[in-house]
Image (tube, rainbow, N blue to C red):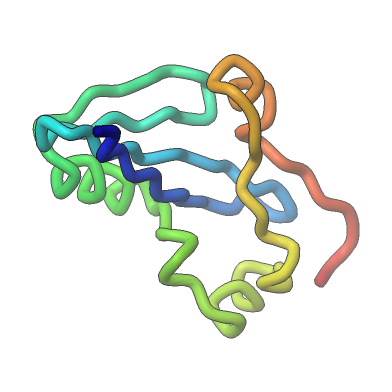
Length: 100
């Protein structure tokens, strides 16, 4: 049985979105794939979330239209990257032109 759950987190720098993927593992541990393509291990999903919040990331599933607008984006623009981990490493930074 595969009980892996992914959460997408983001930080913004102007019109650039920096993505991070938090992956909860069956054993109760977690890992974060960061924007540099590194996979960082954590003892628990809670400690991974705390590290992301300390780095000023916000969970995509907790973002509403007002929060997105404050960051200069429309909520519909914010789509996490897709693909295998190898492809994701190249897609963890997204640059957008203009203002939402």
